[in-house]
Length: 568
Image 1 (cartoon, helix red, strand yellow):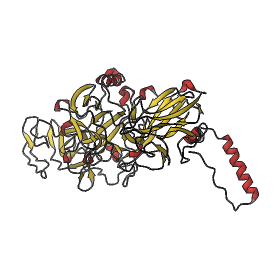
Image 2 (image 1 turned 60 degrees about the vertical axis):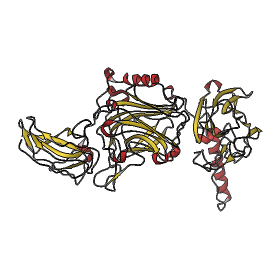
Image 3 (image 1 turned 45 degrees about the vertical axis):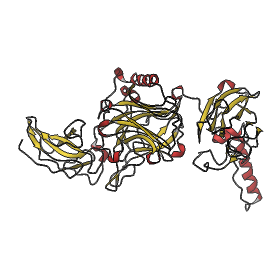
Image 4 (image 1 turned 45 degrees about the horizontal axis):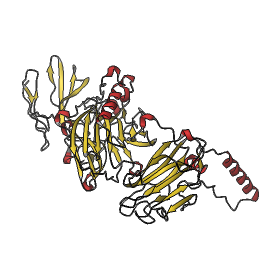
């Protein structure tokens, strides 16, 4: 997009106008491509790199495929959105549909700057007949990119540093005539993008949560910043405080400084327009350390990362359900395909695990991996393609959560998440295993580190309504603290507790100990819903070390708990 000089006032004196013009000329003369931003870098080599003139000036055509194809339409009539840069773009279907053939070629440009050339590409998938290419002046293709049978643009970046100083062109080729027989192009950027990090090859998105503080995190592929929602970002009865970041430690390797999701108020948001996902294959992976597991209200998992509208059978979801059973689902528009791990491959509360889900329609499978090993596989049609959901991509929060008491969203992740990656293709078993091995080598002694996510009372520091002497749970909801029981000179206090948020739900039993009934020390949750137990939904009975029952509260989902005390 070409930059424009500010409009000059017509009412000022001639001397003032002359001085203003001289200042503008001096500023424009001193501006370098980097100083003037992305448009400046392109303007130095191409006159119409993003079709913002509203036509094909600066480009030449053969055939008829691209006649009348420059458009400002944000969507394609039966769907949305292209996510083009600025206003105009080249939609290969606009002029005559899929049938016409031809080419469109840019004027020559000199490769400068970083030596990177990038373009926005979408449309049909046909690497032989339908593509955008970076070429030499004689037409030799140096790099090529085709579409993914999707109208939404994705950015393709080519490393052309070996051709720095040479004159090159961009050419779009359409020799396809059947369905999806068109290619789309926008925003050619020359010498602007950074040289690629080899470790980021094949990634559509990557959150490494390396900040260790603050209310935002940077997605490394786009280098854009995504906000982190948290209840005390804008506190009412206490000073503002950051989301809960874990202290960085070198021995934790790639998991150093992970983000802790509190189970009800913490999540990361990425706008739908910023998300560019492949449709014909992808892999989603992450390191996760759940602190506890929800009941799974409305049959929905606690989302780890998702961009889904399951009712419309669109998008994808990676999440964990009751008792740690995790699952992956993907929508194709006409169907929703889902696979879950067996209980033997469930996640364990309080421990880190590496999980990955590969959507491979070319092989007709969805495959799940735990710590580098395959644990589940489901057959899908080889024609399956991801249908994108026009909703934000969320980490830690479900796109359509159940709501408790009209206020609290559930189906949210409770625990730590780190190293979230979305790959542009389906990784093989060997690649998943190699990636896991690489991460393991970053840990001290080659062992997965402790999760370190005990509830910290300091998050409420400065809260004017937090009890100073009356016992309270370290975080979140509590009710029915039971009469302290003295065992071996210490008093044990048990109370109903929701590890996921400040509301009555997902009940377990919290535990604290004291020697004087004044100073209390928090201990891990004493009882939690456990698969294969007599109380898979909520604990029913507490016992003393001598196996005598202390209490028999019925803290189930279907009614309020009613404790019954007995002698120790």
